[in-house]
Length: 613
Image (cartoon, rainbow, N blue to C red; front, side, top):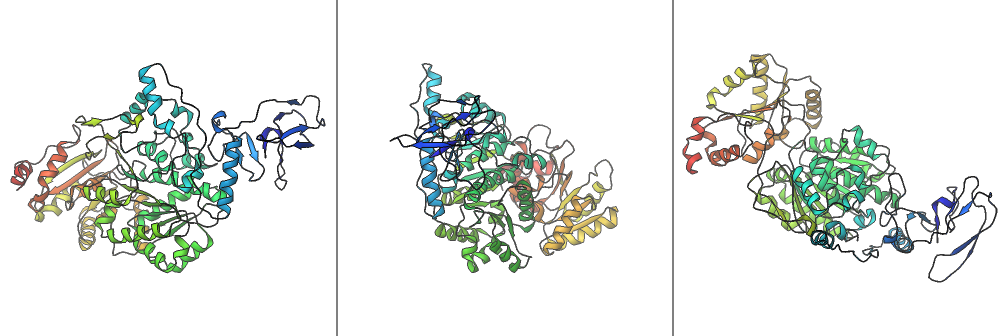
């Protein structure tokens, strides 16, 4: 039995009884008599104890989900299908839209309470109406949004969230969807691809979360968020790539928070964590947790835990025992806790995010990542949803994703490329394939500088007001080199300078980074520790004092620079880097016109550039 919400006012401790929907301008129905009728909801006789201006509505109770309208902004949504929650199920106290969804809700809630795996809930679909227009008919019969009218995920949390495309997205033609992707430089590859969102309101955010997103500066979804958020909400595994500063972290945090919040409401905050986010460095983990905390402000039963080295493990165990929904961790410390306290961290985990996965593998964490995933999947009560994110996707990561991910969707965001081999229609679930290229959105200058002259060249740039653009990051290849060069810059240029690398403690690194971002230091000399993930959008200039060890790493280091018109990346190169010349020059020539200053003739005419040897 359930009650039309307009018919009642419920004291929090009073169970709800079934009623027919009525409108009243003065009083609430005070007496309800019920009689049973087969195959229908209990019919109701409302005693005439209301004012004469009470008008009874004879609208029939909706039997199926498809008979119910969409929920408008601010209206309650059905916990099963997200249509208008016209009724309240008196057995669960949840909003439902129809008899059909009421039954699913009762069954599902019973299984959640008893911790029983839930089978795939399905709601009855109306018979499709095909257009007489050939183009429209193709769109209707093959449209991805039509496929998603049914909850097709086998994942518990995706069934619980029950995401469906918003009406504004559902009515778009296949051409309009393709235009959104093209305009926003979104490249998608996979089967049954969910449609992108264009507003945060399209993904049914928890209460308060819209305000929280605005507080952290997200008024509209960024390009990567437009496609990643709905894809994660429907339960798909993901391999995603976008440049630093694109909103990549929020792209996975937003749907993760929606899923974990939904689970938490059913389980009243007990039994987490429901999601684990893993990143390669303590700094990046700290930044992810800080953003997550801002996003969940005011959300009931939502807590995070930071699980990284450099902090006593006892404090982290205590935090986990108190109950958290989302864990952010580095690989080493996460594996330690998994081995010692498996029940604390893996029992109810549903989602696993690997951020900066290419850096993770380059740092030697590949075996640990595989071990962590194996432990998670073996202890999980259902299939684990895995999300992999990076600024670039080299071949080895693609191969690894094919092994680890289940029927995944690949999403990349980059600038438009003219040499497109093939673009198939997203509306019929086919692949969209566009050749990837690393586009660096800042001015790049390449200088041929011999090793003995590098310091002199650097000091010349930093002492010239025409070129000096703090805040500045100078990248070097060694920890000792970072310390020595930092001291030399401060002495020769008079600039407030500091070094950062992995030999410094977690506390030191956090303080240094915060001081740099606050403007206490003009220049920071760093090893590759600052090349990934962290939000350093205030940086105006990067100097690659030591050329990166790979083109991918070069892209990441240049990506530390703000994308403003003042952003500038300067790189010193010489014979030591000849093995990179051919690939490096090819990549630079693919950059948009005006982004790269004229290249040194020694680089252009070198045998390794021309012939690869």
